[in-house]
Image (cartoon, rainbow, N blue to C red; front, side):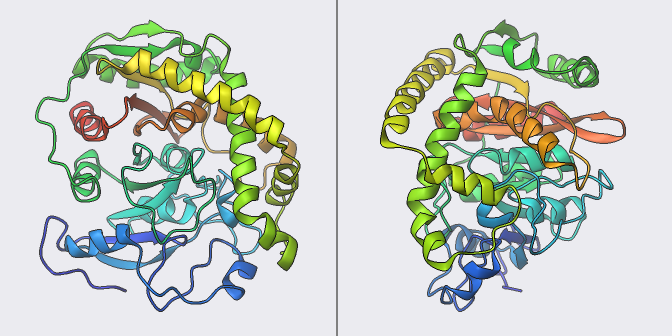
Length: 376
């Protein structure tokens, strides 16, 4: 337990921090026993954690993460799977699995995670939480284990939109927006087209709630090339950055990587400079497209993930398919460095299902206020 300052906007609240954030005098585990054993205790506490402590919140402890943060399921071969209290028997989502599970279970008021390819947004949807991936670079990630730096962002979870916004006031260091209505309200038609009929039907009441608070969105096609192509660009670029960060450590220490992580790390080691060059051109086009689509203050409505949380111990082939479908939705914000908020407004078969709002660069505070307005 780290005590907060005792005063400030978050006084009296408790939080957990994903085990990628350094705490002075303690080792950072990064979801890996070998990482824990081959690294020294941190000399300084990560600035994002210090900001929350200075605002009065107390840190209850570290929360579990997927191994090397290279997954979106929450199943860690070494440490087990945190319990998803809102979808019993199903995964909590990763890689911010412990942070999401702790908030959903009421163990803390809010929690700090990180999001590279969906590691806040997917767990927020699976666990029925509000969660934000902020604009890339908006919240300091100094003193945190990197996964793929040009995609990595700090993010956080809360059980209600008001607290998510309150925490945002501290981490974003910007005052709340009084009138958050977008200049244009858009619906990602190609993203919704990826859903099965039962998932699309389950999201309809949530869409009705959004329309009643904000108005009727205008359908648009986000990707003229197809979201599957955008995902491939994300996959290659993320893999190359992961290998650049951790390839030497993996080769030297030969860690016993768990299923899925082992295969993805091996695949990442084979990404070539030519692969990266080609996919960087796709990323540049994605950024230009999203700037055009959202540049006048528009906000985009889209599904967070294509289904409810998978069952624990789902066969790897099924998980790979689910991950590929999920990443077609999650890669949009990642490639363009945009902020996105999960709204826990839907349910299917008794399990949470998220809807998201995504905005232009720097619209984080507006999105948080908009989430609060939609929540009512």
